[in-house]
Length: 280
Image 1 (cartoon, one colour):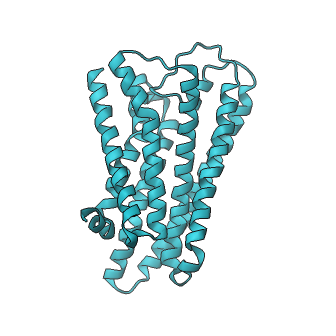
Image 2 (cartoon, helix red, strand yellow; image 1 turned 90 degrees about the vertical axis):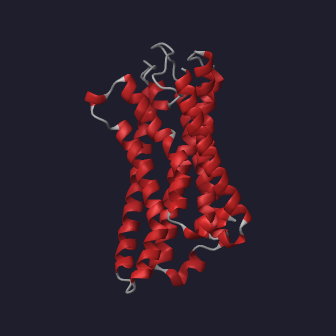
Image 3 (cartoon, one colour; image 1 turned 120 degrees about the vertical axis):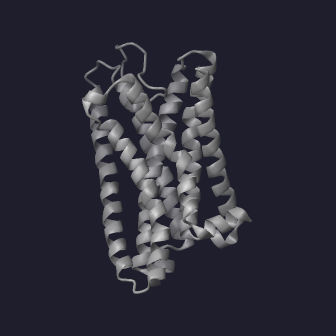
């Protein structure tokens, strides 16, 4: 239990420190007041909120040697997890559009992604995901739970809560999950198509320095997308042969805790502007 607490504390502090530095740097340096860094600031806020929803309660339970969580706390945790994850998926999709316009249509960049447009896009992502999470959570916790009250996870997650229901009304929530999966799939397809167009445009750049600069702005975002989508998809579509409590714990840490901690590091490694602003 103490090892579990120390491990989670280290990840939590790393996530808060990294995302806090990103937020502070972008907010205080006027050279970084561009659409790309505006969306990166939003992503850092979402990552900070995501780990803060999961980690403190888990660490407190480790120190208290308990696995208990109250019903209202479980509802709140499920809602905020849904909100932060869905908003992050939406924001990563918007960021891929930003990179597409910057590289494939640079002359129209200021027109297509002005400050007002960026604020509207970010606000739409936050607002739609808020109401989506509210609907999802209300629908889930309105179901009667008759399979006990032990969630096979270190945080309250909707698919795990649905396993506790024996009501036929859980089918409506199942349909909501199917629709959610298709929306995530649509976002993934949009990102893939955007990057196919981006790589085609980059390869047509005559100078090697120009190609290197273009790749340097795109690869961190692509790495974050692969980390976020890849770990989540593998966790939910893993083969039954590796489905055990220990494996489920490791995979849930990989898709819920590790990306928010690694995202600031990924974005700051290859980004010279951000590194220069951080050093200031």
